[in-house]
Length: 124
Image (cartoon, rainbow, N blue to C red; front, side, top):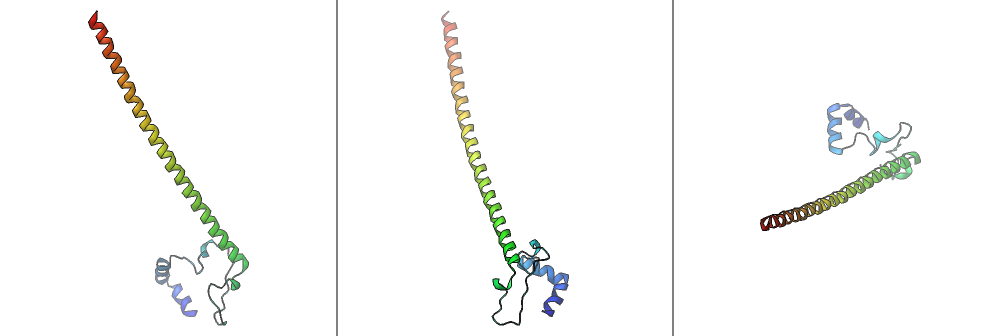
């Protein structure tokens, strides 16, 4: 652990580690956790893993779960909003097409009225 601590103190190695792992802390949600909620790992203990839920305090686990749930809800809301925008965009396109068709019909009616008016004037 002392080697890791020494390496982590080096800014260049720490930045490289952050780029490779995408994490800015040891835990996945390190930057999101309160300072009072810490993971205690006992590396010399038998059958110890870094991801053992029993070794994490309930506060850390519940906070991590809450973060995941919040992110999932945000992603779901974003997808729903994008879907709604897409639907509204399609409706706007349909309305535009209907408006263009209506304009064409009105133009045809106007031209036929002008033509019939000219025919009526020619007869007189």
